[in-house]
Image (cartoon, rainbow over all chains, first blue to last red; front, side, top):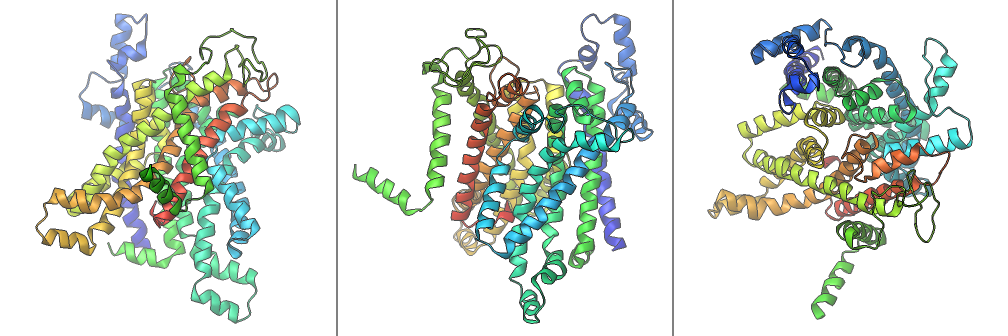
Length: 318
Length: 283
């Protein structure tokens, strides 16, 4: 087990180096000279020289990358041009909100998808199963923002149950915080429900056909006991991998949802940074979210090895 | 005439179901109105204030007007162009990039496979939305950049699908037989491997087009796709969502257009997948 984790950790290093190089290289992708693009109209010659030096563009590429890496490791990602905050400050302030949104949405998605998958897998082809499958299939084809707009219309504009926008910090008032999170969390969770239900259902169905399930049934064990003790664990492998891949979709979804509900997370910040050409801010977001994504995928891989001993044997042998 | 009847009889014998044909009809309709939008008797989609704003559906404006008095139906029809160009264009690029390299990696294996596959894994290590946002921030927002960005982001996934499909085809007897008969590599790739990989790819391609259309819609909802006044479905939902108090049905039209289009494409993909017996995990 230790050996497997070590191998997996070692593989992360080159990926992290390359992803960090990409976020460093982004500034070079700007059409023309990045200094012109950042400095904008009304740029003085002195400002031009100062910015060139500040961005380190007077040094060779590799040196610049190493400096970028050194600064990034000490938490220095530069300063926003539009607000006076440093990129690190802005991220530290806004990341918890996005993480809360993503975490709660996954809790809700699991609470809906797992029981639904179990109920539908027990009787494939039943009415519940057909409705469940149609529901998931349609959800997969619905854009996140359409669900969001619908929920705003129904619960905020018409029924006035939940606020459409506005956010209360978790540390200020837990109740108000959760209330402002209800609609965003539901919106974000529905996409995951569809994905998880489909995969878990088909994996559960194939596990239910295994011999050890027939044996358990023959022993007279209850369906509930068989489901929870024999079937769930071997059926979660594809699911865990998928959940880690789904984090990528979740980040994209969270960005859109923060805009709909005006939640001040990194999504809202990134979109306004893009619209205001705040390049260092976008660069910082790319670096931090990508590193976070790589580490979460690593976690999912290790989790998979914990669930299935065959994986750690097979992969540690490589 | 006999040929036409035989063609339809053959289509019927495939037993693809009513849902499949309804979906095909919807996509065909969208493609046709997108191509011939200029010939349809529609008001200019960009001309503001030709009519009062936020009108309900009427004979003059079948789907009503938006917040600045533009004809909603006209914008819906012209808006389909961006969705279709990005959806199909980006995936076409993805197939060129990912499909070609995928066949080579799957067929040659060894060092070719290792290097190309490592590259794909690194690409997949980025959250897709972040990669697209990064590309459009630093390269600008135009139809071309958005299509290319989504295509590039989609290509490693297509690479992985084509690579594993090629690997399973390349080990079959008929490939070995073809080689034993002295067929050239290009002949083996084109005549034996490509047709079989293409079947698997076809189902995946439709799913990918659906995802690409959703991605563009998300970008345009955020105001990060093709700049206004070009109509896009995502932007139309965005505009309507700020007018929910005044006009609570306007958002429905672009939302339904997106839902029906992506749903139809997914239904087509699903039937193809079942027809060709492709396992879902493969995709």
